Image (cartoon, rainbow, N blue to C red; front, side, top):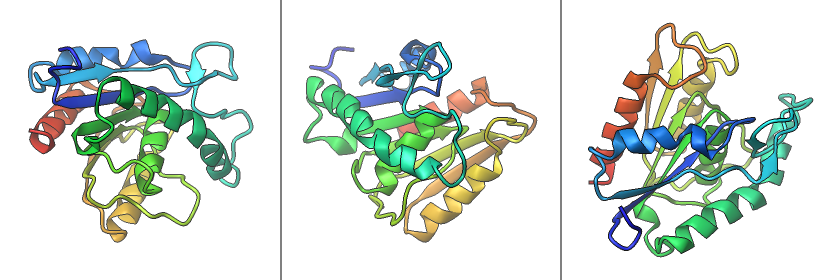
Length: 204
């Protein structure tokens, strides 16, 4: 699907220490349910602090207290990455046809983009993440969100997804959550299928 014929833009945002290629298979899996979409999976702007891959922000020495500050500092790099993709594919005036799909740190940044009100996109799918944005939150409330998390995630507890959903719903957002029993810090085939059908329903 070329950007000239696409009516949906899906931007996939990887986790820390990974790269854009890691989430690219999702786009291949979703081509049947989103035939009019173009899928873009960029690298995060900074090399990972741990020697391989890329990061939206460093998690070296990260704490509950300093995480939101790191997210705030990462916004400029995130916004430039996303803005360049949206401009390139001709969706600058069609944000309601853009979806963010994140995994782990990519979910953190996707939720921040919407919760801060900076990016009122058409949909967000977040796998294995958390909401850790600096306050106050001023969300784009029209953006529907699907959060998927494994109950056995040793990296980011599934309770973070439950907490994020409660916070965002209290601010007037529509959030659907799926907690997958026994799943660790990964995207399952079932979760991927659920994410694709959610986007197809919202962006049809």
